[in-house]
Length: 222
Image (cartoon, rainbow, N blue to C red):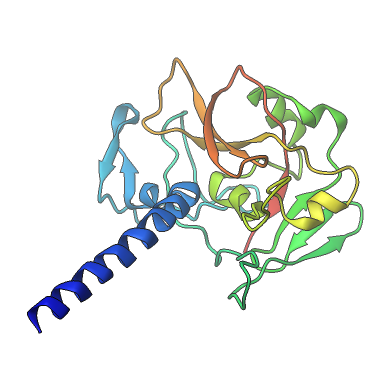
């Protein structure tokens, strides 16, 4: 009996170990660990800070965004105001990825209600961070990290890791890294790094503002 019980404990431990890397990888892409932190003065992270005045990660299309900032490196980090879309991993899923065409604009995500600009202008294939802000100006803006990862489809075994509508509607979304406005924490005012999302390999990276990346503009949010 004791030996049988010991074997069960080992099996449970192995099963947990196989699931843990997948969970950590998902959390790393979405950035779940960042959302329990606030930012202290000087760009450093403070653990377990709750800011009642911090708005959602999604900036609304209005004269005053939900999150007001006075300098780089002070942008509060908080949860998105919508459920995360789920790609088809071989079975029924909650909040499945789906899009509706919006005339002369692009595609609206049925889950997040974000509208993604498509097609993008030619210069959006490679731009510095400042150029990206100019491309996504007016009624458009750069997405946050949590917004842009909603376009990832990690069920694709090969090829671009973007949702199908952005791969099959010409011009296809570039298989490269794309800018987000989300700053890398702790913020270094010299390096000035932002998170970029990789639609070739499906991961995240850090990129300095003077470097180049592709651009995908967004608007709205629920």
